[in-house]
Image 1 (cartoon, rainbow, N blue to C red):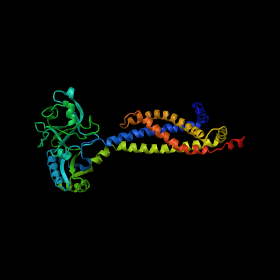
Image 2 (cartoon, helix red, strand yellow; image 1 turned 180 degrees about the vertical axis):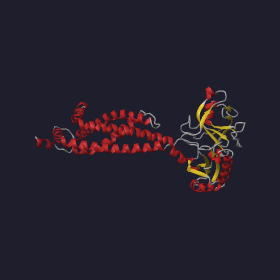
Image 3 (cartoon, rainbow, N blue to C red; image 1 turned 90 degrees about the horizontal axis):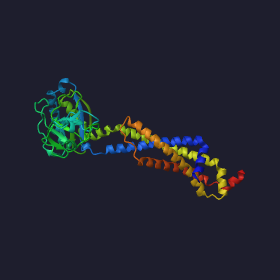
Image 4 (cartoon, rainbow, N blue to C red; image 1 turned 30 degrees about the vertical axis):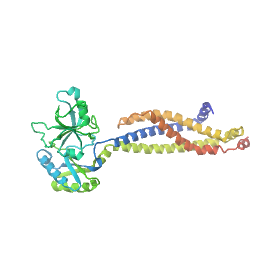
Amino acid sequence: MSFYLLFKVLFSRKVVTGLLLLQLAMTLALLLNSILLAKQTHQQLNQPTGLDVDNTLLVQLKPTMASLRVYPALEELLNRQLDAVQAMPGVIAAAYTNQSAILQGGNNGNVYIDGEEDRTNQPSVPMYFVSKDFFNVLNSDVLQGELPQHSVSLDNPVQPDVVITKSLADKLFAGKPAVGQQLNRGRVAAVISDFYGQRHGTNIMFNNIQVAPPFSVDWGYGILLRVQPGQAENVRQQVDKVLRNVEPNIEILHVRTLAEQYQRLYRNEYGLATLLALLSALMLLVTMVSSYSSTHFHALKRQQEIGVKRALGASKKVIFLELLSENWLCTAIGALFGIGCALLLNKALSQVITIPPLDLYLPLLASLILLVCVTVATWYPAAIATRISPATATKAL
């Protein structure tokens, strides 16, 4: 059957065809962006973090007394808490930190080589003020230099040395040795393996760490615990009581593993991907029902026409392919409109979440899925139509 005749058949029923095209276009737009968002979320949730997220616990807390939130009373409280949690069964190492790893945003600032700000400035680098066991908790590899072994107060006339991650060192020094170099934040003492810092930083693996107690914690602080495999839940259940025994005047905001922290970081994308997937599945189902109903209804209306064709020698296979071709052509036109709708939806989504532009192969993949679903839906009514005998035409004459 020629394309001209196929178009003529489709547009002989303008309203039905128009509604079906609209439905196909909307379905493809949802399906495309659902696939794209699911792919992105999967990649984000499976990207390397440089951390043992399943066996590292984060306790986020803050003192309820103002006097305990500032140095030096704060440092004394932090040390007492570390001694207590370090003695807990199942805990390998413990450290305090002004902020956790794997955050949306937080305490950050510019880092650059002293005297070379214009050339080397890196904005929005997370700033960590931690105890010396912080690197043991993260199980970091020391790639250059030696880790600081003593805490230096931030009000000390001498700046505390800094430890930076490999990615930041490579960016600042382009592969040259970083140890001993002077940054605006202090002298580089060591370079360690990368770990996930802040999502909205310049680079998620850029981090600047100083072994120094935080000067104040009005917004709270974290205690990180590296635990033995399988002990995370046991430690989680006990740590609240242990910390309150040390100092009752505290508010424990939450206790979670870094794996849970990571899931929460991308929960918006994960939730939206799930919602779009459900809507896409529902739209596909509705489209299949509509395609089935349309094909079945028009096959019944065209019984005489099909009977005449059969009487003139058309085989069942020809009739079957003709009916499927009408739906394939309708799907192809709907898919073209759907790609345009998908681009508009992608642009709208990019205003509220981070979503990449559509890849070239995704429209082809989504169109193929849509085509398969329509074919499955119209297979049975098309097969029924081929059973119309030539006698049907002669009875109506």
